[in-house]
Amino acid sequence: MRVSVFGATGGIGRHVARQLLDEGHHVAALVRTPAKLTITDTDLTVITGALSDRAAVEQAVTGADAVVSALGPSLKRSATGTPLTDGTHVIVAAMREQKVARFIGLATPSLADPRDKPHWKHKVLPVMARLMFPNALAELAGMTEAVTGSDLDYTIARITNPTDKPATGHVRSGFLGHDKVGSAMTREDIAAFLVSQLTDTRYRRAMPAISN
Image 1: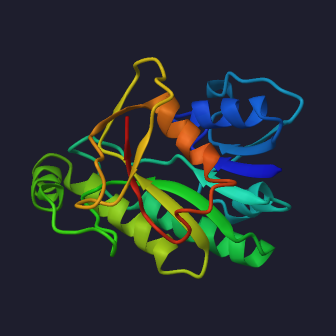
Image 2: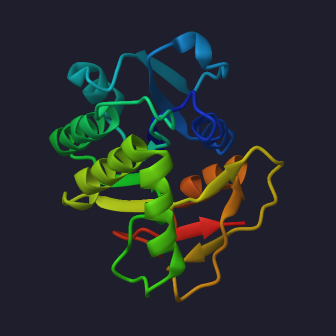
């Protein structure tokens, strides 16, 4: 399978790219700084460009069977603007143009899925995020809306507390108020969940919460 990866130099994205390659997929990664992508593989195509570069984004998704976005906003309180929201709109437009339907990405439980029941995370996490990371929450909301408001076949995994601990191989997933989903999850396990959604049909056009 040919998979386009956005955010391949990030903490989760580098695991996504590596796991895809280990499974025998071809990866096309759009990166701003190729030197930060330490992976080398004959099945890896590196495209240099920013999310605002429509031609580069379209090149990255051309011929793809799916897109995996491991993009996440800056957690700096000084961060401003909506580069990831705008960039996600560019990705969605390129996918439509190239007739690529499958999108797999990330969000936060601060944003609800219609299948959720009332849960403390819906009340507490948005308040904390607005106080600590107001621009990041706005970016996550904008990125999510760009995808869920489209006709794409999406799965957006909602994560709370990613860690750099070793992978456990244990994943809980589901909807708040229904399923026992915690908060902490290793970045390797998050990546494994995203990769698994290439063939797992349980969460089509849904936003499951995931944890270890």
